[in-house]
Image (cartoon, rainbow, N blue to C red; front, side, top):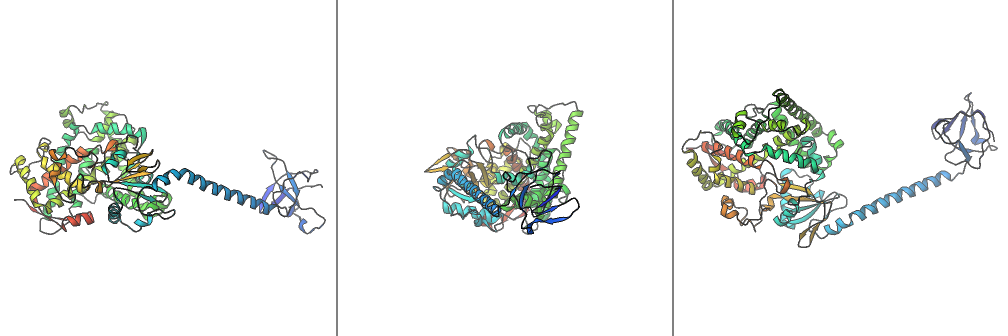
Length: 577
């Protein structure tokens, strides 16, 4: 059969052009693909062959003359399309079943080991997510504590298809946090925290984390920390001046006051920049930093918002984008200015071993990172943001809990004041110096006991890279996640008898002897332990000494039970006599 002047073919609504100048086509070898119902001639005269009983209906597969295969056609088989779709459906169904079987096969070891662990019964696909449906931050925390009470110090939770093993047993905790190979955090935590912390120490892993950890640790040299005490004292003095207006016998929330003070401290010591948060709590930088931290917590409690494109469409996502844009832009500008100043000075470096040189220059942590010249500007930026965020919130919450606990335990508050009088006499205004801090051992015990009862980092996450035997028949499968619950770990009666009682003498030198090193982990433990824990303790001692010499904490609203149930506190202050 001849096809003359065939120029266009309409095939299932697709128009394919192929120049044909005539010729004989063999029908026997053509591959049936789709039905051709009409031809267009150059004169656009439509010839419908479907109604011509003498015509043979052909199926045509079009191929271009340039870089295309041969032009083929074949007699139409009415069942060809149906057979093709059936074949495709069977293939797709087989592929889906195969994928599911492969998933089951790859997960069989995890499920086998998980079946030996206690824990609440999961539902298909969702796991135990419904257990936390509708929970806010406080309710989520309370639910975790209830689950520990019910299932013990080692149990499992399925969050979707991810296995989490919750640990409160110090022996088991050591096998995870003490393992040098387990430094990766969970994918969920990293995904939510990445926009804020970017590639700082909290989010990084592998060689990047190891290199940065070593560099950051060197900036927290004892001489550097000692010269920061003057800054701690200066900002603590501003704090007590602000608190003076609250000495009217009424209850108030002290946390906003202390958090602004710690933000001032960390911005000046980390970046060398005064944000004056206490003097202008509505400043743009202050508002954006504090709101960014709130948004981070809110997103963390909504697992469905871990999908970036969904989160970015929400009001929370849009607000976070705006606050982070301002915060990161501000820090980037500070880093650029520090780099320019360092280069203009001829790259003069400071020997941190020389205390007088450090004090004379009043260096910030950012200055030391710039002088070190091992990190790129972006890496310096990420580490500074991490230090500012981590260093502000943790110290603020610790100081608030100490004050609230002292309000409940007046006898312990009096012991603290006796120690303060031995250091400062009756001088309630003298600034704290770095030489004063070693003479406050009991205040440090009080801080440690407050950190035991109310650790600032409630959960520590790690990815389990290899099977790990925890003893008692429990084995963690490779690929699961561990979640160390510090709050319940610190309440293990084997290591802390009568664990709910506030007793700073637990941390006297003699009582610390023989205690399991992973029974008390307020700053984490192992290789990912907080690099700035000394900084935090020194800042807290300075701030609390300044406050307690000026004010007497009368009470904590609701007593100790209010602290445990709400993780919030209000205190009433009056001038000390």
